Image (cartoon, rainbow, N blue to C red):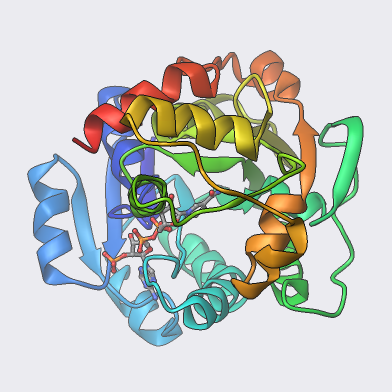
Length: 309
Ligand SMILES: NC(=O)c1ccc[n+]([C@@H]2O[C@H](COP(=O)([O-])OP(=O)(O)OC[C@H]3O[C@@H](n4cnc5c(N)ncnc54)[C@H](OP(=O)(O)O)[C@@H]3O)[C@@H](O)[C@H]2O)c1
């Protein structure tokens, strides 16, 4: 298929572009920068330069493009300015999705895949319940992360309800691999600046970026219209176990244990580390014929630690 990929130069977009081309698809990447357009062309993709938040600019840029499918893999999380990152990402998931759906119609696409996150099930302790795609997404509650939940719901709803468009949603777990978040966590663990709650924290569902990209290729080829797929690895892990294993692999002392309330001093950290969920990837395995190659953090941590040396 010919795929118009928004976010082709990003954390998941980079391995995704490579894997799509290897699988025999053609990729037209959208980027705001001439330098990234050049990089994309060097990997065998085509590139268009456009700002997805500017509807007219986007539609003009894709005027001569034809594609079978559009993928939305955009975030603004590449900055350390937390408020800007969250607000920018929310805008890309609400307004950005609407603009990309207009672009999808303009290029003649009939399939649209969008990035979502398992955290949309709700920032809370879900206990031992195994979460599947049949579980409802959370209602946006007041507070710091309410707009983030609303934006995740918005991208999903727009894609599912778009006329004559096969909408598919990828609900990814926490990415790790050769990306900026993983590098930041490795740096913090090395410096012992990332404390964990004495309780060990909640269960988190990771997905290695190469496996996330592979699942996305499979969803393009085999995903059913109107469906969401949880893209997580095979074993949820407590934050303390993950970070202890990372510290051991890096050869540094394990993170400090602190009472959970102390984490409130760092924006979002308390919510992230006390949210607990165990998410099933059974539907993606069954319907997409996809399987993890990095099945748990035990395989993934040596890979990311090695890449950081
Ligand atoms: N599920 C998760 O855990 C999750 C989800 C998302 C991100 N993250 C993490 O967040 C960090 C940043 O990841 P990321 O790849 O999303 O961010 P990134 O590396 O900053 O890349 C963002 C992508 O979106 C594109 N983009 C952003 N705004 C755009 C706009 N207005 N118009 C056109 N393109 C636009 C960028 O293109 P150009 O810059 O080339 O224009 C780039 O391809 C990574 O560590 C990643 O793992 C985690």
